[in-house]
Length: 459
Image (tube, rainbow, N blue to C red; front, side, top):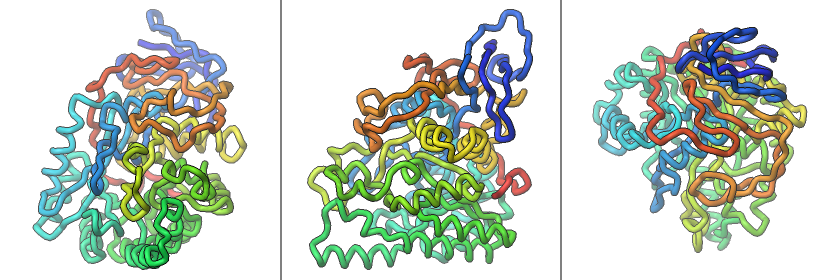
């Protein structure tokens, strides 16, 4: 038993001065508690948060010619150091493969490797061989979300609109939440061809090759398809406020539509591509301008953005040496900094309240992906996943002090307000003041329940 004392408990509704008592793997009580024999864990001056859910990570991802340096062990260890106690990773279905075989293979890769608990999203790339008949079984097996890509034809991730629409038609009744990487592939290919003809293929042209229009168009198309199919839809890693506004208006009209953005869009701007190291900032969609970033913060504060993920994808810089933007496998490390950056850039700067921070990186991901109330909340009976966060500590990001095998950070040199002191997973301290006490393999697959609209507060 642990008794976390002296801290301020943060929930989506309130901030509460009180203690948290754990009993084994679960939370036993909050508030004023009296538990003889419990091990005290002082949190004076600190915030006590529910364990963070990073709802968007890519561990051990192969794209093009490269596989991320981060595997399940290294990436989940980095996550634990950042207060993440549950990560939701992606299963890539290969052409001709059944959905269930893809999921079983991914779970086998993770087995014995993960420091923290994890869930799964299924990436759908092929529905031409009866796979749609598996949708109900996939959801029943604990994977209640699937992702479609509207781009990356050459890499094998792309799903055509008809197949996407057919998946949506099955999704609503089955309790499957379809999530979308929204970028119009034809617009991207056309712009890329223009740049190649002009000889503008250096990495600094990465953002120019992927205009915001491609994202906004695909979001509008996805909203139309989902509305026609009567299915919920969730758009990942949105970089443009115009995309968020479209989702907001759809919700006001009664559609079940959800928006996610990522830490990098709230922290970095496209000026970095003109700097000396554009290779550090290659993600898709790319970074946008300062005005767009400020509008994303306003949308987050207004409740128009439901979740913030890291989109952690731990490629290393040496995997980009000598390449132009047409040949790079995009992705950046970031899971360890999801909470610290959102606190520092959001709460500490007065852009969002602590309760809003908890909503977008704990409560809403748990609800949307079927993990609530086991995860994402501090209530008796929930898993004792907790973070003790020191808001007073000020530090500078250095890749040498981080834990991703990518070996660099796009946030290098950034000053951060607040730091994770202790991470607790299912009642066990797995990280404390810079020291790991958890072990690989202690993390478990956590099955998600079917998507339930009544359990999600939109907007």
